Length: 282
Image (cartoon, rainbow, N blue to C red; front, side, top):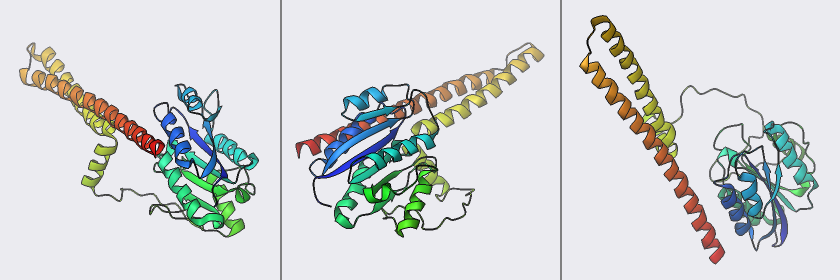
């Protein structure tokens, strides 16, 4: 695809004041020189500063006053793609764990395929309730229906044009036929690998969960201490000491989870800012 082609990016967001500005700036700087880019942020009823920061970052903003069904938001994004006078349309749902780097990776596929490009899809990291990241040629976006889910739209495109979606970064692409969903009783990771993964990626859930379990244990020992006191009119020093220790340890784990989660978010934002500054300097 030749340079100077027009590109419209619809970013689906909600409660993303920490990341929305860096996302918009990375999309604009990462496509500069290759595409004429228009970034549209569709906000689903955020109560923080997501809308204000997205607008200040140079994006057009469409915001709902209150949170609505995701199908309506997706339909709005598809309407934008169908009505926009653009050569390429891209949907980025940051609620599914996808980032601006994922969108730029898809656009690398667009440039490699050139005029032969049709569509490429990157599945979300956090399940089927989110859209993921999807790039599609204008000739295809105008043929799909805005009713139903985005998954229905993807299959509609494949059915009409007999296309296979690109595999990006080794992730599983959308299948050409619908498969019966199977429920997995246990993750594919081994227990220790799963614990390490949760500790690294979700420190608040990991340490906070441990803290809550310890605090629940302290409630049990606390009730035992009170009951023992009323029955015997004397204090059980062992259970009382254990209760105090459990409360202190549980509070420590909760505090550690909050601090580590805040540091993780801060480092992610710093890393995104550094990448954007490097691209600007290049």
